[in-house]
Length: 237
Image 1 (cartoon, one colour):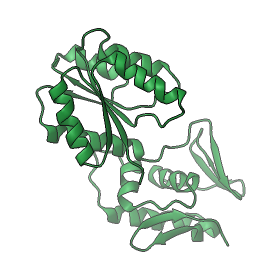
Image 2 (spheres, rainbow, N blue to C red; image 1 turned 30 degrees about the horizontal axis):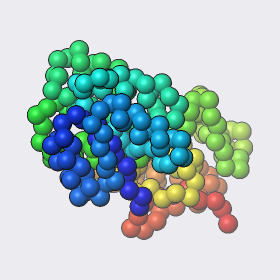
Image 3 (cartoon, rainbow, N blue to C red; image 1 turned 45 degrees about the vertical axis):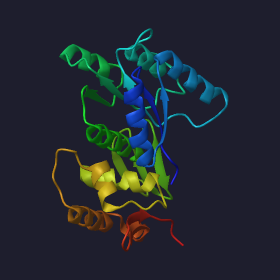
Image 4 (cartoon, rainbow, N blue to C red; image 1 turned 90 degrees about the vertical axis):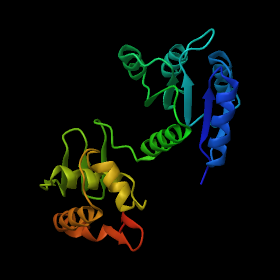
């Protein structure tokens, strides 16, 4: 598995060293910048050399010169870097500062002083969320033969005839169909389809897959179980 590339941006040398040590020990490819200007230059250099951009920024807010908020704003305005997730690290805990961070597209916000374990947990959580498969855009359709998913009006048709699916069944089908051939674990399906605040077991996935199969008619055989792994939508032989 490819190492995730993380950039720590903070003017505190000791803090950078601690975070780098722990991130690298956890298997990440971690680097540091001691100012927003330095971080911006490193990102520009990566783009100009066609290197892999960072998978995550740990970004301090209050730094001499350009602030973390300003760096985040510039990154989000650039098409190439706007997708990079950001966790703000800051001593500012006022509500308006937190809201400003999230308004700039922050994925999380950690107030100093913090425990390294907390930061590592949040890093893992953000990267896990970002690794989840993305749904179809609302203007996209996706089809396999005569099985068509219309993301605009949330309908599914077979041979032009609509089939009645629950929202969960629809979301499962859309995910598996638009990533045809990819195997998803039950936990990945739970994380992608079910709301985060709903407590369900992996058995719930099995029940919904069984119901979905019954509605897919001749395409039911395409929805396969990979023993010990999970589920996949495969092409017919």
